[in-house]
Length: 66
Image (cartoon, rainbow, N blue to C red):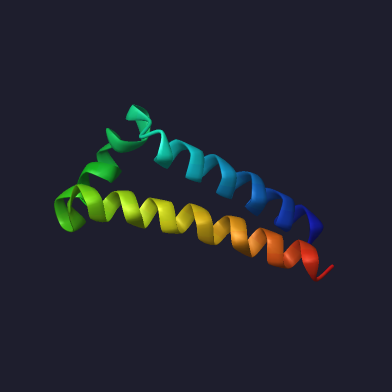
């Protein structure tokens, strides 16, 4: 479980950073373009941000319970 928590923390930090800086390779990805058509630009931004923060929080919670 310790490896999972460390992975989730690093993944959450990375995703959150990339979303906040609006990295072009994330938002110009063909899969992200599908999300943008479906949810709009702001919706995609908030979805990715929530996903990154959820991974970060889950990793922290798992680490605290060890």
